[in-house]
Image (cartoon, rainbow over all chains, first blue to last red):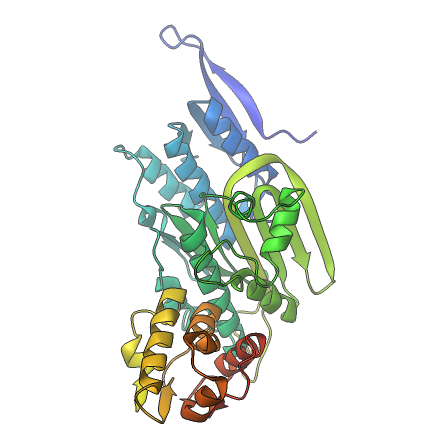
Length: 292
Length: 100
């Protein structure tokens, strides 16, 4: 059975009985499996000190940086000390260690900003952050169509977060990874099911996520909308891409190229909404040089 | 009369709020002039919210659809923005807007 964590008991003459939970992150820190992260979120509520451990050859995808930022932020809110591995070769984990070491409350969301040649992660307050949108124009040398699709996706997801989540901050990312462009927006605010429950009556959180992706579903009372997530799905579908939404007690994954989907109830609750997109890179009239 | 989106909505051509401001501006202008041009030169909007709120919902302003279609011209749209706007207008049953 896969175990995320190990209890470690420190015992010195002075610190007898002091327990630090040691928590293993997955080898691939990305949007493919979220159970581990939700287990860690749960652990943050019951432990005051957790040491993060890495497996050999850990890889962090563009989505992974935003996931880790959400976890780091949640640790601050729960007043749990997260010890990030000092010896890690991952610059972002070293950055998280430095952020965690600061005192004085919740860090500025821009503390989690991170950029390499292949990816950008930005933390933002509850306003539209166009920095990453502007970077898309030149950073990844995408085809014109992919550029448009990524811009539309990110702008719609940002607006959804700002308008509906009530979160004070969110994380937005984009990056090239394994011949795909990954992009998405993550927040730890009001979940989609909780929001839609105000207006609709569904049997499960899965049904609420399904509803959110349909045209016209909205909680707005004055200004009708309900198109953002619908077009999010439609644009990923036309690209043969992958869509993942995790919120509340549910996750939905669409693999449009193979026409498969997965919809499942989560064992642990996500107090927020994480939207991930993976679009295949493809050549246009000019070849995209980011393809390996 | 011309509204330059790049100039007048340079800070925000994305949100529903900005779209609502655009729609009000269009409606007020159409009540005052016979012809109105929306110029999207230099813009890549890529926002369903802005287009939906700003243009596709024009009929909600109490203007007759044929009056809108007769008086309003939208120019220099990026091809993808054009495709998006056409789709949104179709959903709102505002078809036939002049897009050049």
